[in-house]
Image (cartoon, rainbow, N blue to C red; front, side):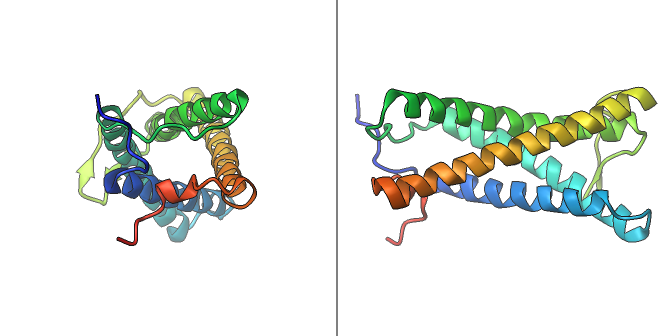
Length: 179
């Protein structure tokens, strides 16, 4: 049996940073567009937000598949509570990578607004049109997105703590290599 690698591979690193940027960008667009008055600009941003959500969902599935088939580096020595917190946070992040876009899709379907990815690929309705369900899904999507934002913030804060306080090299394991 081989020892775990000392750092993540290039594919895992690419998924990490691509999804991180996509999630932060999509969250920011979601915040911005939700306060806009009804206009062509708002409709354009809603479509972009939906396309980004579908892309995040697909990338999350690919990332999870990669993670399940490729061994990550071993945990760095740290207190047991930090390791548990890390594992729980990562598990919740993965769950929300799927839950946020799926609930968004349910909201769009229940509200009667189809998702046509990049204006070319119509997706089937995830749930039937239902005004009450749309309102519930809208609220759930927002709460889950805020939950994801909180976890991403905790994840970044923990990485910065490891980098600048612990100085244990954790961040370098997920940073693109200069080799």
